[in-house]
Amino acid sequence: MRTITFNELRRIKDSLPSGSMHRIADELGLNVDTVRNFFGGHHFKEGKSVGIHLESGPDGGLVMLDDTIVLDKALKILDELNISLRKDDFVEQSADI
Image 1: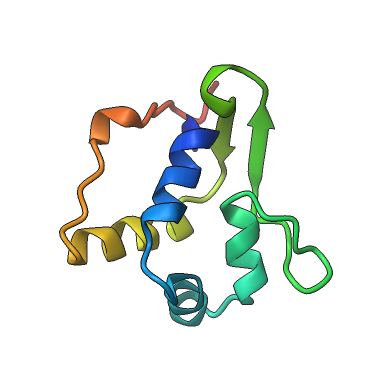
Image 2: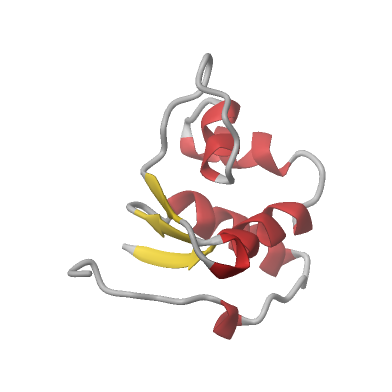
């Protein structure tokens, strides 16, 4: 399990180049709306829930991610484009929380 702030998750999404949602969906075999839901979307007619849990709080609240594969793909895309995000912006916690 990984925990980050909602605002950080949105900042990652907003930093991605055009077409990234489709690329991530294609690489993972997911519906593009499912990928959008991972980043805070509400496209449940076509997409599925993605195992994120929201908790209210400062900086948009906390997002607990059951599976980080979509986030990992997004960070890989940013890395490929040399778009750096500070790693200390993330709050990582173990699954026993």
